[in-house]
Image 1 (cartoon, rainbow, N blue to C red):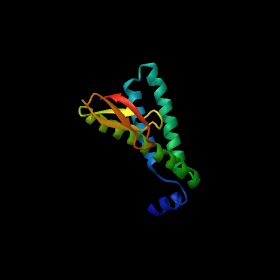
Image 2 (image 1 turned 135 degrees about the vertical axis):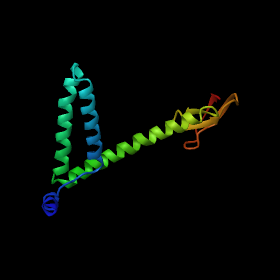
Image 3 (image 1 turned 120 degrees about the vertical axis):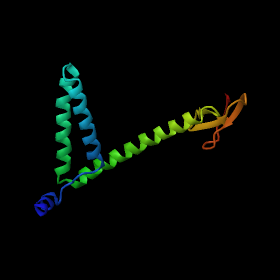
Length: 135
């Protein structure tokens, strides 16, 4: 039986990071649909969960591995960008008592200056632009 499954999955995409995310989102939608089953939202969520479930299995059994790997690469890039922004917000939140954050008007780089220094001249390290700000 194991060899039959291996032969069946040969040349197919299988399970990747995007599929794992889609399965998790699908389970969350099914859970929400059962919790809100009596409302209009619950009736809308269950068909959406079934479509998402079908998409997940379509990707898993697809033989077009190049296209699926491109989709997975785009998903990983988006996830890395979102997690990087979240990490930056978390660090900025932890440092909020000691530092004030500014955005350079020319290159949009985030700059950190110590609090309690009054009105100071801020020079961007990336582009060299200078502007004043109150810390």
